[in-house]
Image 1 (tube, rainbow, N blue to C red):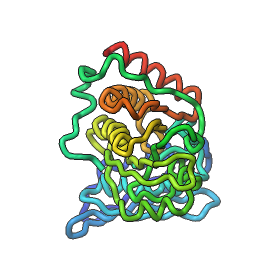
Image 2 (cartoon, helix red, strand yellow; image 1 turned 120 degrees about the vertical axis):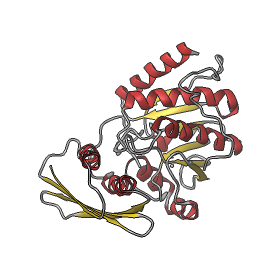
Image 3 (cartoon, rainbow, N blue to C red; image 1 turned 180 degrees about the vertical axis):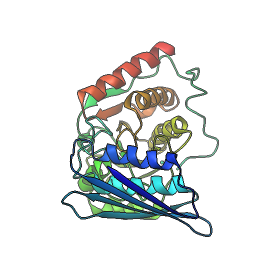
Image 4 (cartoon, one colour; image 1 turned 90 degrees about the vertical axis):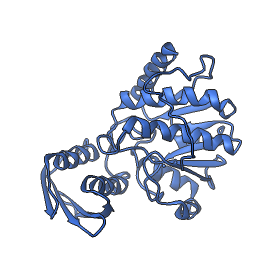
Length: 300
């Protein structure tokens, strides 16, 4: 893999180089061939503009642009866009984000509690209903009132869960999402489900691992906000993917620990949304979440 990063009045450090290499390797996992990545970072008056091109052997270049307050954030946004475009065609690691493609959505309310409480589980109800863990397709959970979409910031169709949910829901979902975008990592919004066999879709944007910090708090906020929004709508039953574990690079074991702890704690506050079901793509992912669930309940 060849990576070229050019900066205009911007210091290009090893952290940015490692970010590109790690994310592109995750996108192209299981796919061989020569790869060249070209990145340009340009300072604007109040933001950094990032242009990113990905060249694959035998394929035309894919290009995307993004802007953000700093270089790392602009580059991360461009990589998210690239992940969305590649979702339908590039294999991702099995078990990531609840559908074969992987990632790339949540509006937080005032005064929300931190679900992790500095890593302790003091607020978790020992008798809270445990989430279900299944291997399956999140668009086929017709017995649940709501499903969670691993959305991109623009809330538009993409790869992985986002692509699958938008395809199943139909074009009306994108139209409903348009006025709600953009959202930031850790935020959630809710829309009708349209063509899906559910009533609601809750769109959550998980953090990019190593970029959006504090990653654990942002990831926990997504899950808690998803259940809060479901409770506000009177939903009974919520389907969850493994947020951020695809091209966003969150290690499955770490993400599972945050996810199950947060869901267990949130179910104590919103018991009427049960059952809550993690819909995972592989048996390996299900086993990782099962181990995390066992550990979390042992800490309660």
